Image (cartoon, rainbow, N blue to C red; front, side, top):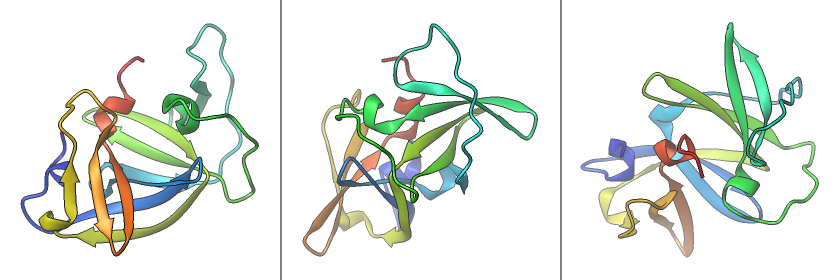
Length: 143
């Protein structure tokens, strides 16, 4: 797990909306955010992989986060975008409803979940809201 998912000091995350919920990924895992629509669908992939994009000469899979988290499908809006993430030497893009902001948070505002195999590492509390922190490495695992 990345250090932002188990913070020892102040950590940073990118906050976004998907399927009506608030989510975050550790800032150091984000390569770029863009609104590309030029993905190429491929046959025989899991239903949560929409296809691939060419990212600086590398074939990068595009993951529909709603499907990956078993949420209901619905139409994406013009604010939808791709967040390109990295885990080690791998990269993948996740399609999200909209990116909202970045946020720095303290260890005491992070509430971990006990299941190490869950895509959700825990919650960042922000006022009355709970933002679900995603374990980036789990998005790269086959479902």
